[in-house]
Image (cartoon, rainbow, N blue to C red; front, side, top):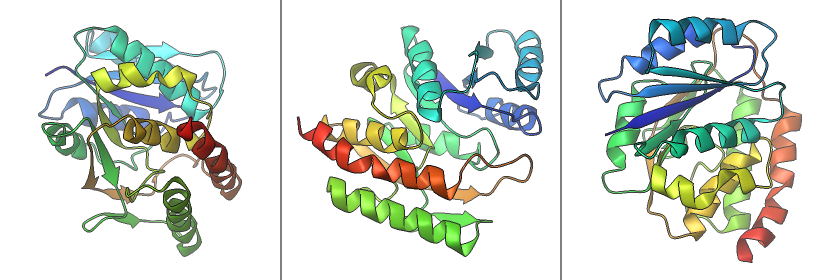
Length: 236
């Protein structure tokens, strides 16, 4: 089975090689596509070394500037599914928050699904290293989105997912209205309203140990403010 892991990066010099090698060591066997948004810290240089060391297993898609997580993922998805041999696309963070060992579990879940969500908020899932305030914000944000979008899914804002490539080709990520973290919600809801079979797999999310987080309360609130408009768009 041909699996591509899409990894967006911005200033992840301290994490990228460790995370990339851990992903490539997975038994399921993957190719890695790193989408770098013009990181000024030299992240792309480290990835370029991996490309030379591991030709055919690592690809670097360099973008000129930071234009939002959603746009980075959309570019990565487009690149990944343009290869007709790609059967599964996995998306995950580059900062070590997502355990590479869970890639195998998410891919296996697609035996009976079109989309597998790595969920922090179902039995067996958890979050480590967050402040109480941040966890409450995340949980409340998910409840808000679930209620407004009338979704039974428990972790709409998570970014660790495995997609069947044929589903991604139909959804056309480049046409989403969301540039930032709301992209996670919009893509999952597009899949749900389109009749995709979706399963949630419990994961442990761990706060990064190196580098600085890109998430803030302002970014989270901005993402959730887009949910009412998203609801209208999904009803069309």
